[in-house]
Amino acid sequence: MADESIKKTGLVSVVIPTYNYGEYILDALEGLKKQTYPEIEVIIIDDGSFDNTPSIVQMWRASNPYIFRNFLYFPLPRNCSSSWALNIGFYLSQGEFVIIHDADDFSYENKLKIQVDWLQMHPETHVVGTCYDVVNIFKHFLFLPGWLSFDRKEIEANYKKGKHCVCFGTLMFRKEILKRVAGVKRIPEIRNDAIFIGEIINNGYIVDNINLILYTVRLHQKQKAGPKDFQKESFNIFEERVSIIIPVRFIKYIYEMLYRVATQTYHDLEVIVVNDQKESKTEIIIREWFNLYKELNPQGIIKDMVYLHLPVEVGNPWLYNIGLYLAKGKAVLLAGNNSLLNKEEIRNCYTLLFNNWPYSGIGIDKNGEITTINWNNDFVNNPPGIMADVSKEIYSSMMIKHDIVDRTAGLAADFSLQII
Image (cartoon, rainbow, N blue to C red; front, side):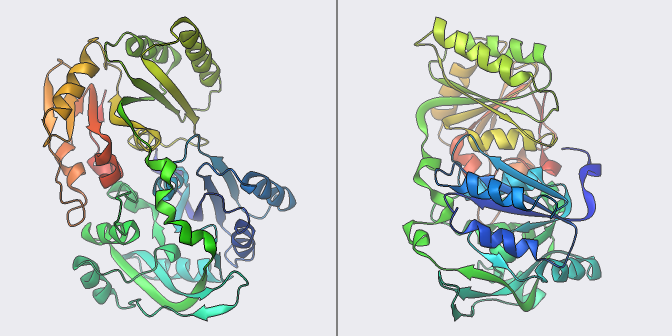
């Protein structure tokens, strides 16, 4: 994981995932502009919008260049879901505190200050939510929620028995919880917001909820089209494809890894390169290599390539997690320096993984020995199972089933395996 010094004391990182919400996002930004708390960075993760969101955000930013300590508009190269967009925003955040904020909602002007004050006055608390009101598209009041709890013991008891009682969209948390909680999951037909809070509590963190209306939820027609988590495109998986995640370390390593990928015997691959280094030549080199590869091998085994250059250093395991979120393969391979030395490696791992349904993953050690990984399937009641089973393991590479990523959100820093 990136050095903890990146975390800036007192800074609040507001993470806004958006997908075609250009008509609403200005209200969210204006609400943040009016905040009485001064130390704010805004991180907008655009999950593949094809409306006017980019121009709306850019115009607003041009008119408000000095409002926040930092402002980042970060479009993703693929539609991933709001869960993955949120997690990427969490990893890019540089604040001591992180706020979850929907693009179609807006905050009262004292919301952030009250929540920061609460966390500073209650050092034992790691997460705090608030009450909220609900309005229609014209911002006319509709109702107040009746399902919230405000006593911390009651909150803990509720989540341990599966009852949701704190509004996800109002949460502020200490970034340090991401050492043990990888992020928001993406399990179909499950309240992933509730699972996220439940996992925080299961890891021993205290969750409070302030009984003050500090946030407004807006109801509108787009919400009826389906949950924000599950845009159809984000779940398009290629049945036989293997996604290979390559973190950028240095150019010579990238060339060597691309050669190893291109000489594999498996027939359907995509390469996802994630770069959190400051240098800027890697993308040009990689795209030139792939264009030449496609020209020479129009029916080649590498079907697609995605390159993502992050604006801040995040380190491992978050570098791998971001690659996992972009993957469209049925299986995903986390590559290290010593991966793919055997041209049959991907074929052998894929065959073993999918011919044995209980297996969740395949680890390959530095001697080429294969280890099977069986993670806990009770992802709702025992969310950190994936992390505990692979802690302190050292692999040259690891292949996992794509649905495991959805059910775990990837690797948490404190439980991360090592891939070398």
